[in-house]
Image (tube, rainbow, N blue to C red):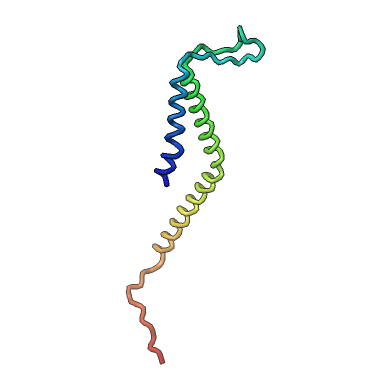
Length: 113
């Protein structure tokens, strides 16, 4: 199924992306000033379009990873509490086992009458 998905989705999308990046090779300046088109107050130096796209992709991946990490906070807190509880239970179980005398005689069932 993974190979089929790769051939049907990922390879055509990758090919379209490569063609798009090759077709747009000129430097592009991004402007954040909606009022002045000719002389924007906030503009970036001209950089290739593929650089802007890769930066947007990396920023998106970073923001998504941060969101996923922050959403898992409660699970990490609960897992840590469970680990500490398990450690305490193991410690108390080992202490109880050490305190009980060891009976070396095997248990014999009484005969059935």
